[in-house]
Length: 486
Ligand SMILES: Nc1nc2[nH]cnc2c(=O)[nH]1
Ligand SMILES: [Zn+2]
View (cartoon, helix red, strand yellow):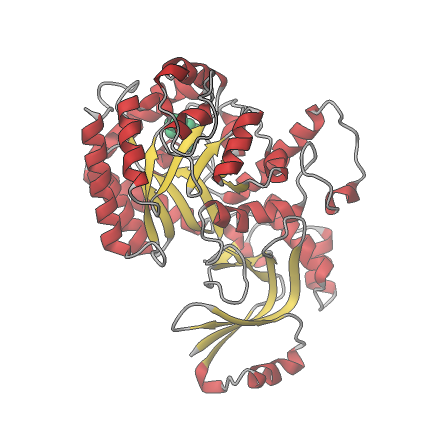
């Protein structure tokens, strides 16, 4: 048996950040048994659809045919490379604070409530449901420091069938008395228990839907002893993913450097050359063996050049969280420069530093952040609009639509090391997709502009340009009303 979709399809393609495919009349076939995309035909008039099915040996009985309507299109599922499930109840509160005050006054009191497993189950069920409804099919979750609550989060994600990384926070210092782990040993023991629980749900990392992720909250909240033990834990298991925060806020960086002077840092396992005489934030994690190809580093707003080089050398990924970076007044990450350096970059909502669980909001703010970076660059010139479509470097210019789409999907998959399985609609990948609707009956009047009226009403044909216009409107003005199926 197979399911065949016939209609418009939009996808980034492997190897290109500057272009994407917009196919108004595609046919895509998914195997029921494996969920894998078997074949795609790019341009099939409706009169030839049956011939194309016959060519692929598909007859009436063994196919379920889904014909998309005008104004609908398939797109890969969104990937949120950094969010906090227990902070969803806090969305929109404490908007006046910067990071460290916000953690103390708003975040830690709420996260502490997740000690109550009944509370956790209710809050996490609603949070995960909302995140899926917003089109996020792969999500990197922070839980709280609680083992039982984080197991509940993993169970809920698994039951919903969402692809995810779930991590229990490691935090044994610089946190309030009511919300801190008693020792490094206890923190690591609970982490081991969480890993065992999640692996019992989902099986081996090569095909698991839900995977554990080691989650030192950030360097400030971990003693050197704890980071040593986490380094040992991940060194013994190269398949274990790691996520943490890096260089988000100026005061946080000053504090981090004061806590980890160079003389207390171990020599990093992969280090070549003399020991550094000055601490960098990335250097701290690296010294404990926590930066590697399956590490996800959230924020990276104020990275020094040497840190960009180190992250590239280790092939770690960056989660760009622009909504949060604006909202907590952290700054604008230099995403264009990271892309030029060949670093893997995806988007993160960072709820509730970010006030939206939707990757669409992250796309919008990633665009604005790149425009702010461009406007503030010393060599800023008003570039011709078509410059965006060329292959000139990304640094200091606004991100093109193709690149925004890439960050929301395939870039996120690369950050999660899932790019062979998801992130684009390509043959051999898992069918992990959304049906988007920009039709009037989706109920979002913001998408209802003149050119779409024309595309959907007065002309019967949607061509490539109309489809590209629909994608742009959806990325900038769409919301969960426009996500018809996940
Ligand atoms: N944005 C954000 N940054 C952090 N740094 C440490 N903890 C957090 C958190 O919960 N949110
Ligand atoms: Zn965060």
